[in-house]
Image (cartoon, rainbow, N blue to C red; front, side, top):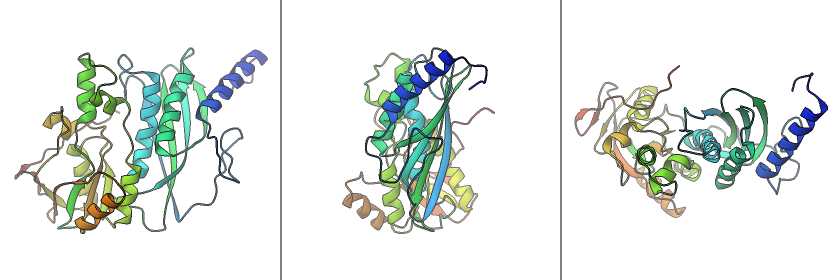
Length: 312
C-alpha cells in the first residue's frame, strides 16, 4: 500500500481484507498452524517432500467475462493450480491467492468462488494479497506433499505401459460452446467449463498404485500427451479418445480444461483395483506406450499436435 494513502484508505482496505478473511478462512485450523492474518502462513511439518506450483487466471482470457461470473473465475483459478498437485500424486496442504483488480471489482464474489473450490478440494487458503490493476487476475500458489521420492513425473513412461485417462474428454470445451449459444449456467457441460474439479484423489490413488508417469490434461490430450511422450522419450499408439456425451471428437482432443489425469502404468490391474477400492471412477484405457519417439498415432494414423496454447 502506498505511503501516501490516507487513514480512510487504510480503513477501507482493512475492512475489505477482513471480509475476505471471513469468506475464505478455515474454521478448524490444525494446532500450531497460522493461516490468514499474519505476515506469512505457518504450516506444520510436511510428509516426505514438498510439491509447489503456481497458476494465473486472467478474466476475459482464461474465462469469458461476458458469459461467466467472478465467482466462476475464483473457483476455476484454484482448480487449475490444484490440478498440478493432482498430476504429481500430491496431497494438498495449503494455497495462497493474490488478486489484482480494477477499482469497483466485487472482490467478495471472487473470493466466494475461491472459498468454494478450497472446500471441495480440502485445501485451505492460508494467505494472499490484493492489488489494484487494469485487469482482473488471480494468481494461485499451491503447496502439497508426497512421501520422499514418490512424486509422479511425466518422464517415467516406458515401452509397453498402458495409457489411461481418468474420464471422458471434451466436456469443458463443449460447455463453452453451449454457453456461447445461450445454454444456462446449470447445464452439466457448462458447469464443467466454469466449475471444474481437480482430480486430487485420483492422483493420490494413481501414485499409490505405482504408475510410471502422469500429468493433467489442462491444454487438451492433443498437446499434453505429446508433452508427456517427449519428456519420457517415447511414442504412443492410441486406439481411442473417449468423448464426453455432448462433446465432439475435436473438443475431446484439443479443447482442454477438462483437468482429467493422463496416466501410464505397467500394472493396469493394480491401477483399476486401487480406484475401485476407493470408490473412484474406473480409469479409461486409451492406448499403449511404444519405444519409437517418432511413432505417435491414433487408430493407426498420425496424431497431430492440437490444443490450447498461450499467446505470449
